[in-house]
Structure formats: structure tokens, C-alpha cells
Length: 110
Image 1 (cartoon, rainbow, N blue to C red):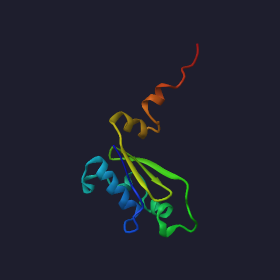
Image 2: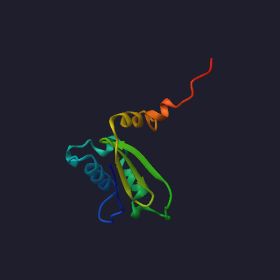
Image 3: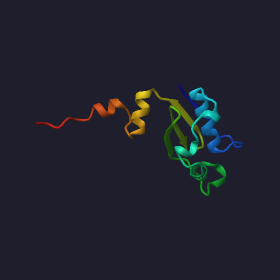
Image 4: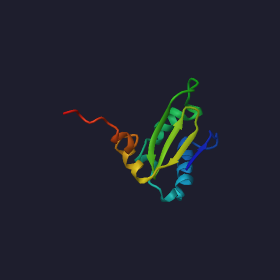
């Protein structure tokens, strides 16, 4: 399941991340792990909030995993959360795109 929310001026980037992950994961936001265990919320605000931008930002994104979701925050302030299956979540936490990518690495020739 993937869902995306756009920039909402009344909520901080961190609040939008928490709301989006909770909705995608089907969890109560108060029962999820704190955002700061995955990424620095102050950094998210500094980089992506409209108020802190000194110049227009129209490129770039930050991605991380949280509560069984792959989360991407875009330069335009959109927040995308995609539910991960258990195998994919382990691969993402190890820094691999997927188990399929890991198994497609060429074996050394004898």
C-alpha cells in the first residue's frame, strides 16, 4: 500500500510523516516508535519545511524506514509511505534495495 500526502501548511513535516506512517501501517501514532529513532526531526524541518527555506527547493528527497514503511519526504514537502513486507524491511535496514537485488550480485568466477 502506498499513500501520499501533500504539503500542509498547518502541520510540520514531522507531523505529516507520523500521520502518513500511522495511516499506511494501520497503527495508532502514539504506539509507534518515536520518529527520532529513525531520523532527526529537526533536520527534516530545516530541510523541508516551507518556512525554513531560504531559496526555492524543487529537487531532492530523503528516504528512511519506519514502522514497517518506506518513507520518502520530497523537496516539495510531500510525504510518501509505502508498506514494506518483512523481507523488504530487513533489506532496507541493511542498506540493500531488496533481497532480489542482493541475490542478483554476480558470483566470482572460479
